[in-house]
Image (cartoon, rainbow, N blue to C red; front, side):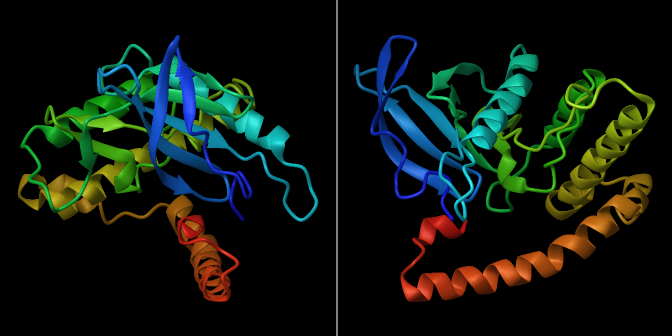
Length: 248
């Protein structure tokens, strides 16, 4: 089930002529593996390597899909490379891997106080993505919204983000993009309600309870899948056929 099969991320990588050594892998699921790397030259600089799928699945070669996912996600990093809240793209590793800058911070959570201006800054960041005809799509996952040491929000992981590139600038595609952008703000309101309810306006509270048909459809499809997935991974782990990190 692991994206790289029996292999792990490379021990060392070259980034813009500098050597970096893997400190640890943080995720290895069906679609991709992600790891932290630190420079070997004493500067203690960190970078992040993400490698999309290279392993076959049920005899079906999927390296081509991994290469496409890599190119696609890199496109978003390039399009947003001038924003200080998105880590810079630094290079590639093989056909399915790319390296981006390391964000000093922690995933959004209740364990760390959220500044009063955090959600205003996050709202402005998402609005800028939308202005560039991009929907982030993954705002429902707090681990993708980093609370930087600078107190500001930072976005990572654009694997399922959406723009007008793949399907073209058509009426239907623009309509879908607008719907997905609307869901970005819906999930931001849910996070704000959970973490800083004292800052919620009456209108925001009302909007946070309005689930669109996209949200309802997504939950109807994904909830049964998630239950089956958890049970399957539990059985595979108990049988020793799945490493713990492969279940993430």
